[in-house]
Image 1 (tube, rainbow, N blue to C red):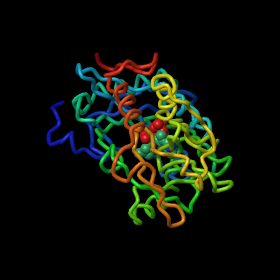
Image 2 (cartoon, rainbow, N blue to C red):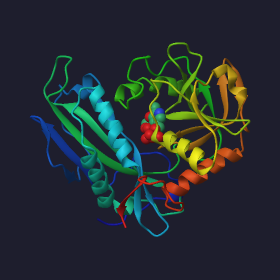
Image 3 (cartoon, rainbow, N blue to C red):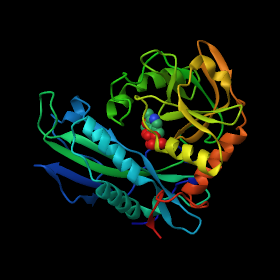
Amino acid sequence: MGKPINIDWNTLGFKYIKTDLRYVSRWKDGSWDEGTLVADNTLTMSEGSTALHYGQTCFEGLKAYRTKDGSIQLFRPDENAKRMQESCRRLLMPEVSVEKFVDACGQVVRANEHYVPPYGTGATLYIRPFVIGVGDNIGVAPAQEYIFSIFCTPVGAYFKGGMVPVNFTVSDYDRAAPRGTGAVKVGGNYASSLLPHHLAVEKGFADCIYLDPATRTKIEEVGAANFFGITKEGTFVTPASPSILQSITRRSLMDVARDILGMKVEQRDVYIDKLDEFVEAGACGTAAVITPIGGIDYKGKLHVFHSETEVGPVTKKLYETLCGIQFGDLEAPAGWIHKVKI
Ligand code: PLP
Ligand code: COI
């Protein structure tokens, strides 16, 4: 395995770059096999696979970070493992144990170590685990065979520019039904987001904001990220809803805000017609990290928070603290960091 050439770590966006090895494990007759690393980045499956027709597919997203001393670490991979178990339960797919998930992530990162971007570039190695239903099927029923696979690809900023404010528009479409699959990370949620995302980008916005499907009065999600706002009093506020994906980044930020920065934290309804309660706002997620929200377009009017061009001071502090922990510059709360290479 030679060193990859022609990767400019400083200008990486969020695009697929083929790396050397990926992990593949198969489930049949009630159990997962040991799993193995393979060079082939294609999967062969039956034309009757439930993943292809009925969306029996879920995924996760986490990152490997290169620290100043050259070691490599993951951020709370056990939380991704547990969330993937929830997604599998919701789609009647076999669960992958936390140990198998975390171990396989480590194998993939170590096998592609030279793709982990250098410390200081801000870039990371994005890890994409997924489970799909395969095998010969035709009826709408869970598959009899499954694949659990993990690949990785080096990435930079998800939204153009990274830590610079971007504007979002409120979508006329709903992301999830009130008792649907909004709280799990299943393929169908993302298939249905393609059109609203496309329409938002066509109008010049970075992505769209989804409102709660029952009343369409409250903010749910910001594209593939969670929403947070900072009030005039400096309180960190983020929506409460059973149809939001429970972001691991958001949960971590709530702890960072409360325990490290001494802020008040509230998880509650965030009304789209009461945006003036916030002096700053942001989108948070593994891919998005923290992306400051310049403004939100709603019914043809742009509500600007701190500024369309400058990052607010609280958002900046949250970003620096979170990234400081993820890249190993700041001490992490117990259990948050999993070293894959010392
Ligand atoms: N919301 C949605 C719909 C997502 O796809 C993601 C990405 O995983 C998030 C929020 C952020 O979650 P996390 O911080 O766990 O990556
Ligand atoms: C992530 O943050 O890992 C996401 O899920 C975003 C992704 C859909 C690109």
